[in-house]
Length: 179
Image 1 (tube, one colour):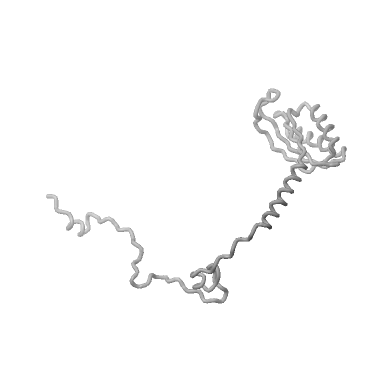
Image 2: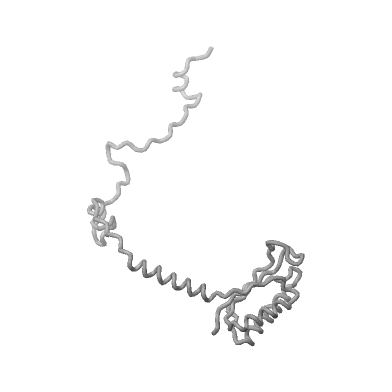
């Protein structure tokens, strides 16, 4: 039975881009000869390692996602162990996780479907004035215009008062002459 796997391997930092591509090609061929399919290849590039591995502080990360039989994974890991340029690797089966996530998503959808719908709001006074429900105007209904200027008797908003200047007559009359 074919399953979905992820393989993350770290290549020595002194390896060139061509060396990394050759390793990816070698692993992809191994998967193909075992009857599997490489779904995705992600080259993450050089990153710092969490701890020293074989006297290296950084490495070139590559993530492969593939579908293959379980027996082929053992052979693939054996071949990876033999490679001198690969310093660490990890293979994880992810098909169970994908199934679990899909199941959880279905359960969420069922709960959302069973959840009661929120009650519809009652029309308010503003909605009645606008001629529609929920404060929205009904198409074709007249909409009252907003006044451009305040109505008579309503004071406009206060404006900032400018500081009087020493040359203004109001200032000189208000302050006594200092002679």
